[in-house]
Image (cartoon, rainbow, N blue to C red):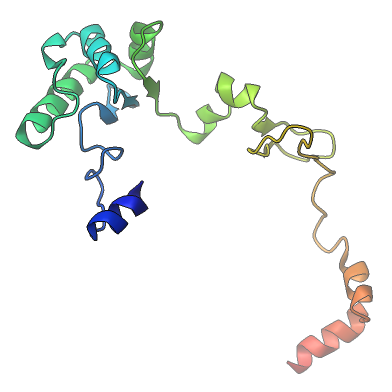
Length: 178
C-alpha cells in the first residue's frame, strides 16, 4: 500500500500520513492505562459499535475524518481509553464486532491462543534445545519439516573442510597467511 501511494503520488508516505498508519481515528493504535490497543475499524459499522461500547457514540461519524476534526476524535477516544487497563478494555469489548486487538509484547505474543493454534511456537524438545518460532507459511500437502537442532559450534567443521579438500591444520595455516 505504501509503495502504491509513492508510485501514484510521487510522495513518500510518512508515519501517520496513510490510511493504515494512523491518519484516521478508526485505524490507529491508542494508549490505554497500561498498554495499547490497535483499532482497525475501517468499515463504519465497526467504528460505530466501537465508539458506542467505549461510551462516545457522538463520534460515530468521525471514523474517517482527518485534520482538526480527526485530531479531536483521536484525542477524545484516547482520553476514554486511558481510563482503563488493556485487560479491562479487552473484557469490555469482548463479544462486540469492533475490530480491536491488544498490542502484545513479544512474550505475550507467543502465549496468544491464535499464535499457539497456528503452531508458531515450537517448545523445546524433539531435538530443539530451546523454543523456536514455527514456520509461518502453510501449504497443503507440503507441511514444514522440522529437523533436529542446529549443529553446535564447530560440530561439522571437519566435514565442511573435508568437502573443500582442507584439513583444520591447513585451514588455520591459510588463515594465518592471510
